[in-house]
Image (cartoon, rainbow, N blue to C red; front, side, top):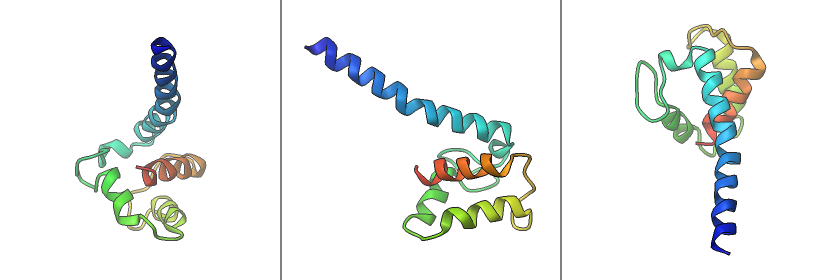
Length: 94
C-alpha cells in the first residue's frame, strides 16, 4: 500500500513539473531570464512578484501580454504571441 502511495506522488510530481519546466524553457528561449528570475529581482521584477501584483486583477493576463509584445514599457521580445501567452499564464499561476 505504501509503495502505491509513493508511486502516485512521484507520478503527480512529474505531471506537475512538466508544464513548469516547459515554461521555464520558453522563458529561457525568449530571453526573459536575462532580466527576470522566478523568485528574485534582477533588472526586472521576479515572476513571483509579477504574479503577486496581478493577483485577482481581471484582464491582467491580456494586459501583460500586450505590454510584453508591445515593446513600449518592456524590451521587444523574440517569442511568439502564443509563447508569451503561455508564459504569462505560467507566471500568473505562481
